[in-house]
Amino acid sequence: MTANTKNSILIIGGGLIGLSIAYEFARKSFKVSVLSKNRSESAGFVAAGMLATHAEGLEDELLKFGQQSQNLIPNWIKNIEKDSGLECGLRKCGIIVPFKNIKDLKEFPTYKYGKYLNQKDLKNEINGINSIWQHGLVFDQDGQIDNRRRLMRALERACSLHGVKFQEGSEVKDLTIDKNKIIGAKVLNATGELKDIRCEKAILCSGAWSKKVLNKIPVFPVKGQMLSIQGPSNFLKRVLFGPDIYLVPRDDGLVVVGATVEKDAEFDQGNTPNGINQLQEGIRSLLPEAMNWPQMEHWWGFRPCTPDLKPIIGKSEIENLFLATGHYRNGVLFSAITSDIIFKFIQDKTLTDLEIRFLEKFSLKRFEI
Ligand SMILES: Cc1cc2nc3c(=O)[nH]c(=O)nc-3n(C[C@H](O)[C@H](O)[C@H](O)COP(=O)(O)OP(=O)(O)OC[C@H]3O[C@@H](n4cnc5c(N)ncnc54)[C@H](O)[C@@H]3O)c2cc1C
Figure 1 (cartoon, rainbow, N blue to C red):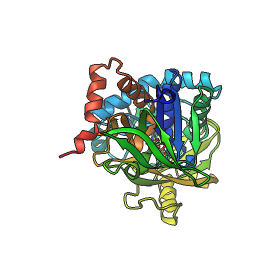
Figure 2: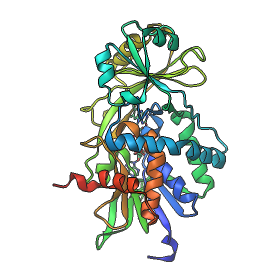
Figure 3: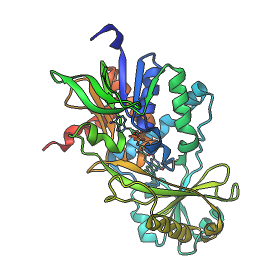
Figure 4: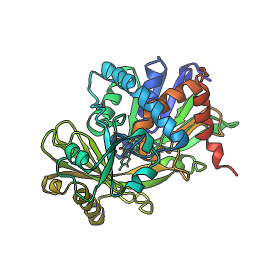
C-alpha cells in the first residue's frame, strides 16, 4: 500500500448505490473516488422513487431489510439535505394497493401491515379510481422520494462538497489483481485513454452492468420503461400501486407512471410502442381520467436483477473488493441501509445480529454450488 492510497476507497459505478456509499465514506473523512461509465444511464435517474417495502409485498429478510432502511431514511435524508443544501423530495405519503377481490387482498404477503379500504373508502381516497377495484390496502408507512430530479443531484453535491473525486465517462475495463488482492483497475476515460488507477479498497456498484466488471456476479438487466403525465396539483395524494402499473404523484402534480418489466430485452435502448401502450393501458385500468393528462416525458432503464431477486452485499472472492449490487426493483428503498451496512462491514464496526443475518443472506456465496 502506498501513502497516497491509504484510507482511499474506489467506487466502481456512480449510480444510486455508488453515490450513497461514496457519501457514507466521504462524510467520515475517507478519500473517495467514483468512476462512472455513464451518469445518465444510472437506474437512480430512472426509478419512480417509491419507498414501497409493504406495497411491494416484500417477504422474509427483504421485508426486514426494507423496514430497517425505511427507519434510517428520514435521518439519512436530513444529513444529505444539510450537507448539499438541496431538498430531496422525501414524502411519507402512503401507498394504496387496490384489489379486484377480497381473496387476493387476504393473500397479499404484507396484508397484516395495511389498513383495509372498502370500495367507498377507495373512492374517497382516489377520486375517479376505476370501479374494477373493489378493495384496497393503504400502507401509511410507505412513501416516495424524488430520486430523478432531487436525490441523485443532492447526493452528488453532498459527495462533492465532502471531497469525493468524480471521473465521469470512465469505464472500468479490467480489475488489476495481485495475489488475490485488488490493487487497481484499468480504466478507459472520456478522452479515450486507457489508464491504470491504483486503490487500497474498491466497492463494485455497477448496477445492471456488474457482470461485465466481474463475470462471477450473476446480475442481469431487467428493462423498465416509464413515462410522466402532468396532473392537477394535489389530485393524487398517495401513490397508487396496481398489479401491473403504479402512479407516483410528485408534489407539483407531475405523476410518474411505471413500469414495464422486460426480462428478455437485455440492454436494448429506447422506449418502444408496446412499452408505451402498456403504460397507457395501465393508466386506464387505474385512473381513466388521467388518460387525458398531457404526457411530459418517456424514459427507460435497467434494474440490476439477481436469480433470487435479492441484492448482493459484502465480500467478493477478491480481498479488498466489496460488492453492493443487484438491488433490482428496490434500490432507492435499500440505498440507506446498504451504505450503512457496507461501511460498518468494511470498517469492522460492530454489527447487530440482524445486520449479520442480512450479510449472510445477501452474500455472493449463496450462488455457489
Ligand atoms: C424502471 C425502474 C423503476 C424503478 N423504480 C424503483 C422504485 O420505485 N423504488 C426503488 O426503490 N427502486 C426502484 N428501481 C430500482 C433502482 O433504481 C435500482 O435498484 C438502483 O438504482 C440500483 O442502483 P445501482 O447504483 O446499483 O445501479 P445504477 O443506479 O444503475 O448505477 C450503476 C452505474 O454504474 C455505472 N457503471 C456500470 N459499469 C461500469 C464500469 N465498468 N465502470 C464504471 N462505471 C460503471 C453505470 O454507468 C451506472 O451509472 C427502479 C428501477 C427501474 C429501472
